Image (cartoon, rainbow over all chains, first blue to last red):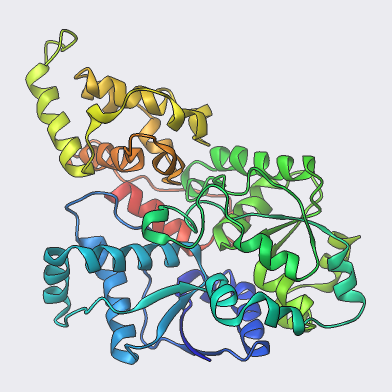
Length: 282
Length: 136
């Protein structure tokens, strides 16, 4: 299958391992990713005020670019912030005709609100299917090492909320990540802090607060017996790794990296350093 | 409105209307169950707890809510919004308070300083989002 892909700013820079591993996984599952041309940053956050339309312009421009490229296509994203911002902007413009008309006029191109913003996790669940992924799992020592691990799924905040607009999974008891990890043969621990916030962008100007949030998540994961946290967002990964880990041994992987390992993809292609991984696994 | 309105009642009433308009939320829908505060991952650091922010405004004391650090400690993770039994989107209320301060010039944009080793790895999404929160 063919999918339009919007990497966003972070996957192009500090989270290249997320981008690379996703491309490898997509290729192994016969998904052809077509990168959206001429894209900009989405603005990071969806505006929470009712009357401020300015922050809608950047994401709307991206949606219009997707519509221009191929209106029948789904637009796939990976970064949680991009996913949340694009999907909420689409939702707003789809349901508020007045806002849609103002934004369309400003962009000098009507947005028809037909683009379907999806996350790779949804593509894996809805289009590929866990059964098909299960049939493609590689054999060997690497997958055995994953299958022996106790893994905590970590969703963070914006991947699931607000659920009436995002509608990927239940905002309180999601299972999309668990189901994927179970398909790979991992032992998934029951992790009540899986939708807790890591402190998000407070890492920039109030890192001590983000540190406390992230440390709590790591400590709770360790308490329920997890050896690995599987994340879906570059900022969660950053906060957990740089602020949260402290002295608790815990490996932090993107879901695309552990999926890539299970599919038998070379570690370096997944942006994983073998030495670091070995330390994490043993 | 009620017996608790302070001497600057006219000013507070105007601000209350602005908060309700900016956030699109009915603050009087809140019945103070405290679920927002119970689930807030940043509540430990707030000088006024999330449900109290709403209570202050219900009592007409918007200036006190505006002078709190709490809106700036909110990470907009939407846990409160997704759990509120009355459908009050508190994250939108916090944003309305921030935006009111920014637009009245009372929240100058800070220059963020991070240690070099942290800044080099900082995801762009964090920098963009933090600046957005401080510039409206």
